[in-house]
Image (cartoon, rainbow, N blue to C red):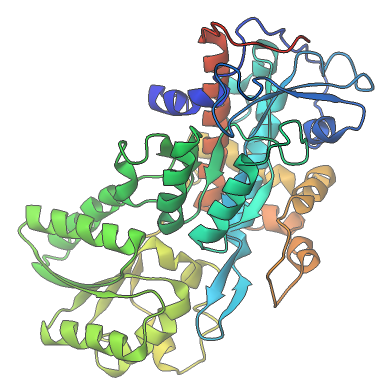
Length: 469
């Protein structure tokens, strides 16, 4: 979490902070989850950007804020510098068949909860999971806040909000402050687009789940980083398993032709070539028509492959696996290795909901999922995180706060904010393990916080004009 790379990428989030800022005195009590949100939005608070427009050091939409509220406890507010880090994740996705947005909020909620838990630990100096956070509120005056936004799986939705916020000329607008960094997005396709824009505005961007190796290009995405392994690592392990454990010399692949699928196909092909294996890969476009799917399956059928890598999304699972079974390309004698993009099919109950006896249902057993995990029980660091996650289920204050931070639902047809928020109760945290997005989002928020504090401690502010306390 405190690696030089993470700190360096996160450091520019605090480049406007002065090295001689007063430290925030911390009381023995833990502040409420919403304390710094309330401070930011308090009508009696002074909320001033640390670097004003047209001053040396101003960098577009990136800024930090000094917040002082005479009505808040003096021990907590003087000298506090707020760094606002919005969280962009996918809470809904497009149902291609009906062209409507449907609920895909578990990943979004998990990621948001991981970020909020990390910021609570950071703001209060709680080192229960990451020891570096122990007492950091006494050593660093920066405090983190966030709001959640639903990308809907579209780069346009993410970038429109980014530009609206960055180009907001009300620099002292506490309801929509200039951001210090970004956490997100969920998918590689949206992340590649957004990382190009965030780089222009000098905004560090940390993703908990975008795996495309395209994002490794530091020239095109100079401030992008992630807390999840890239697809290159997955491709290496997959081809190694096929060759070493199954004695496979050739195999097939059906992949969605976007930033995620195309990049993963390239990684798999590269590793297959290194291992002297033959890969037969066929692309399908997002929202592929029936004839495109049949063309892909016919291609693999002609190549007589028995092992197939499937890299596409849940919305076309039945459309692909149903015909695959009917053509003899799934079921007995065939094994599919599904990439992590299909995790929701198997982990959120979608596979169990397939119509019994349908071709897609018959095609499902006996296959494998290349699933990402933020850790496994028995690993000490993950056990510490899991213990804190479980405690949230019995914390009414945390549940109320987390549910209040769900995004606004402006374009959704099947549900409302209330129905999505209400199903996050004690059981959500106590009876299920968090997804990898939760653990990696926690890591992302911690890395950004530690990097910001490191920058604050070491930066040479030069001619920056820092508003007086």
